[in-house]
Length: 369
Ligand SMILES: [Zn+2]
Image 1: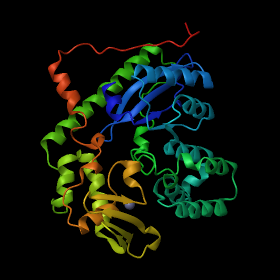
Image 2: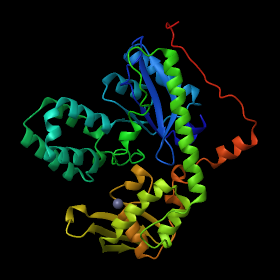
Image 3: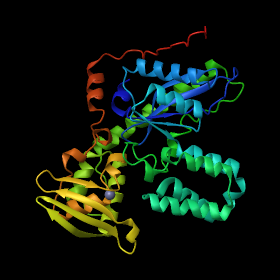
Image 4: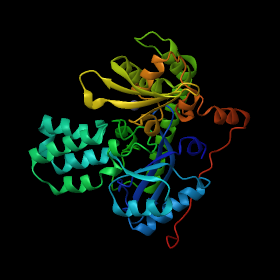
């Protein structure tokens, strides 16, 4: 519950496990912490994949978590789940796990796996496209080359749920634009099979949680004790980033920073205190994004919407801040969930509490005994 309070903006809900003796569907409900590691919010067993079952499950989950809805909920490709999500979380954005699309493509079109051009273009469409034009052009080239396949049509129809270029206005922790979704999905990775009993599962599940928590502790420790290293001089914005962000997030910021060095910024016009720039990477005019900058408040916004979608500034914004000699990341662009101190209040609280047995809460669906 503590984790959900901090990292519950993103929920990954996976119903692809069907791996125990009673043929129950195991549905782990997973989040991403400030180190880009998984954290477990809960786990459910359901007997079927009907809309009512998913509605019950999501309602029970929200109730147990104090009523907070996620901003984005990622699920595998399932119409019933989509329906239930829309009913229970009307204000949240339902998205499809890109990782599952990737897996489905490999399963469905095994031959393509050997084809490096297909792989490259398809992965580019899944993870890399920044603009709609870019996405449409790449997708069309797949269709032209590999003939019209029904699967591609279906996936294309759902593009707003998975394409990074089309989903930039909602926070998704950057999952849509990142291959990191691979580690988030397939989260439990437990070696269960059809003969695994519920007790076996419980042991595996507990082991997974213990492993995750120990990884988290190590990451928190490293972040509190070590200073990020960089090939670039640690000064200004980069230094500030190394102070506030976890080591993992610092790498994301550093990558944007590196890109920002390669950009060209052109002042387009000025209106009062507001300046409008076009920022692009040389020789790639399609990459130009419009950045708006307001002096007094150090407000910076970009048409690529990386901050809105991922929670850290894009290289376009970094370029403009740099141009204005801003050497600290303006406070409004440091998302607490990505900082070293994201969980500090929880750790402090735990330190003051006596250690006690973890309480697990079980809720049974009506008519399920
Ligand atoms: Zn940008």
